[in-house]
Length: 234
Image (cartoon, rainbow, N blue to C red; front, side, top):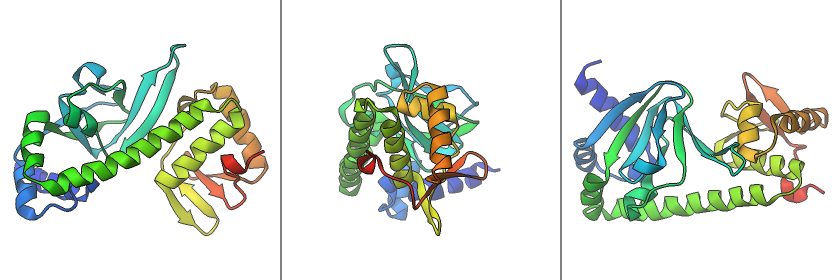
């Protein structure tokens, strides 16, 4: 693929990113002038706490996870980002580092926006600033939900909360219910919920027997119409 084709591909992808979806062609061209492209192999660290205040990243291809180690050394999974998703936007605003680490779940290509360039661009584009505020509100709601997850002492309620969250954020409506389009293993759910993998497997089996969830394809989950949300679970 020629550099021109790669820039065209990057431009089309960035135009679909919610943060930049309201920009016109000239503004997008200006934005593309300072975007850097980097490739990472599966399991390679993309972003550490130490350098998290230098860039914002847009996932061009592949998939990444946002994690942090808990007090017991267990990996806590905060989010999974796929093609078109972005992360690091808060650091571009306040210049502070993040407490999380970002790791490639598969071979991944990202576009990087440096803080100085982004500061210059956002100061002349109020639409971007307004969109940042809107998206930060979404991230804040996500953070509150994760606090709710970790505040649950009941393992099943914790898992139901995560399933509900994933259905709302990454779900597609189906005649049978909602399909979580992300491919997640029991290990991923263990990281999301901070539960032992064996506990997750046992609870998933129970939910399948109760016809509340079904496995669809490879590692995709259907939340059936019988699925009970955490708040409805007694």
